[in-house]
Length: 357
Figure 1 (cartoon, one colour):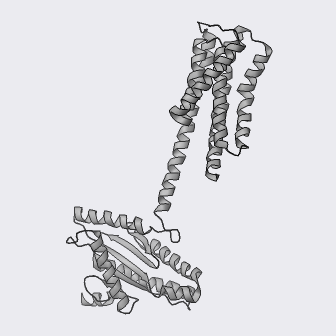
Figure 2 (tube, rainbow, N blue to C red):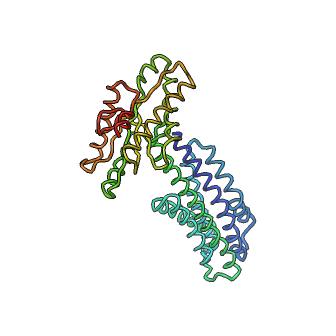
Figure 3 (spheres, rainbow, N blue to C red):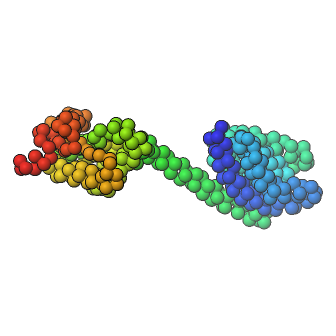
């Protein structure tokens, strides 16, 4: 109900602009066509109300309705009815009548497609019928130069205004779609890519490495004894630690690196065009920096990272095998005492790897 109401109010606001412009220009067109026919005063009054007052009444009617969307559809049918009524009142003067009918049809198509075009056409036919009853049936075969020029503003300006409104709507919808897509791919707590989005990036990187024969590394990062942090200090403190790590990843990784939250207390990073040795150096620096930062902020909180690294291997059949190597290295880092970086090339901690080079 709330979504329908919001959608209806948005439609009412858009139509308020287009209706105000269209009926104001239409008032000029119809009044110039009606002038030679010398209509009675009440016709002029109805014409003025329809062209200048009705747009504001229609908007307030829709805005105050419990279902603004349906109220605006009703208002559009009323617009179409009056369009048909004025066609009959103008005695079917060719250019003003064609202008009125075509502008109404264009508006109905823009709002509701073919289905609403047909509904609007039915309302116009009803309006023509009522007009024929009110006014003596007649036909004005020639449009005067003055009437032609009176139609030009409606023919030129209204399509421009309607096109602009439709463009703004399409742009806004596209922007909302992009925002929703970003939200669907982002972890709400950390702002990093979520599990699925990061796996998509890993698959893309695997194909790129395979295609271009370039190297890359991936890292799986686990916060040691994270459950005890939640149990001892509460989930709020745990969330703070998760956000701190994600912030550090954003600040210390290269712009080409891709970080994500793999799940729970586990994070993941893709390191393109980086040899395993350099990736190990980067992760070791991250491990030390994170421990120092947490200690400085809360000395009572003992936090460390276990990190498993794996390089791209052309022998891998798919990205899952690559990820399994990193997961195995992470398992070895945790089994070996935690608070260390392990590469999948062997079971040596990062500093032992450096010492052996």
